[in-house]
Every structure is written in structure tokens, then in C-alpha cells.
Image (tube, rainbow, N blue to C red):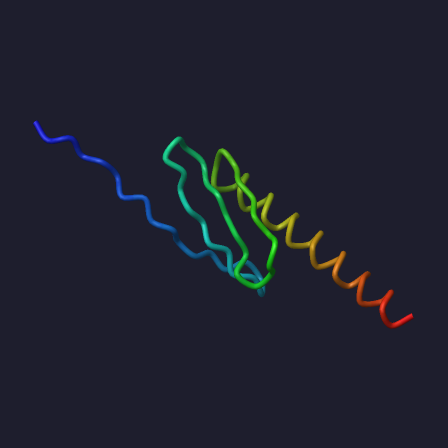
Length: 74
């Protein structure tokens, strides 16, 4: 009997102004990157957990970048 394997394909999710790319992990859960913000990589055991982590990481990176920009201008 042939063994069927699931095809694991990345899929996009838009949240606000951000585009996240979710990749289902073979062992379960998801890894996620943000296409709009370099450096945002997260993972979670569920879709909801991965999205929450990615949103938090995006907010953190954006805040740090804004603070660095303010320091450059000072």
C-alpha cells in the first residue's frame, strides 16, 4: 500500500499592514517570517501561538528601529 505524505507548503497571512509567511513544520507547529520587517522569525506549536509570537516580534523590532532612528536624529 503506498504511503501518503502531506505536502507542506508555506502560506501567507495578512495581519494589519504586515504580511506573514507561515510554514507548517514536519514535526508539528509552524515557523513564520514577516515579509515587511527583516529579522522577524518566530515559531509556535499552533497557528495562533506562531501568529502571536510573530506579531510580538514585529512590534519589538519596529520599536527598536524607531528608537535607533530617534537617537540618530538627536
